[in-house]
Length: 182
Image (cartoon, rainbow, N blue to C red; front, top):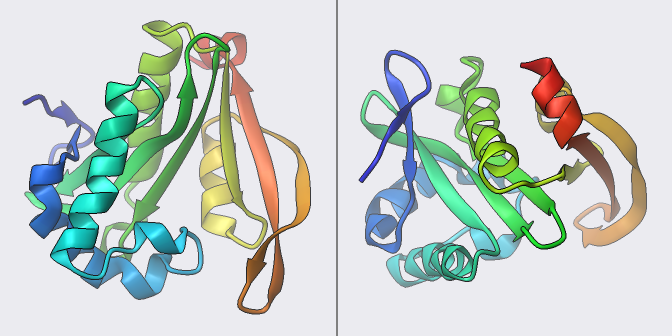
């Protein structure tokens, strides 16, 4: 297994189905905080559903269509990043993230997303990386900005939510822009 350092005490590692118990324990710590921003199918509630979430991403990885990695800080899973979708032939992918409150404010998500975008652009030839987020998710929008992404627009009332329909902002960075920022 590999681990990529993010800071002196944090690293990025694959989040595989055999990590289901650790993933579930992490979700219990993060659930209330991330529930407004992630899909209900991501919020596993028992060991079987945790395995199902991680298998779904393992299957995407096997099909070269997505993937998921965990962020460990001081040996504890505190969040992660993923390719929600990945299409090397088209040259487009969508990145995403989540993080429990105790790990916020250390730049872990920005560093971790940067690592997977570096790989997608540099190794796989991705030309456009998208970031889609609830228009009310200020922390996610701040990550997009720190990554040098531009706001493409808003998909108005795209999904139903508890307080009405949800607007989704689409942000992106193109390969040339990504390379230029380094």
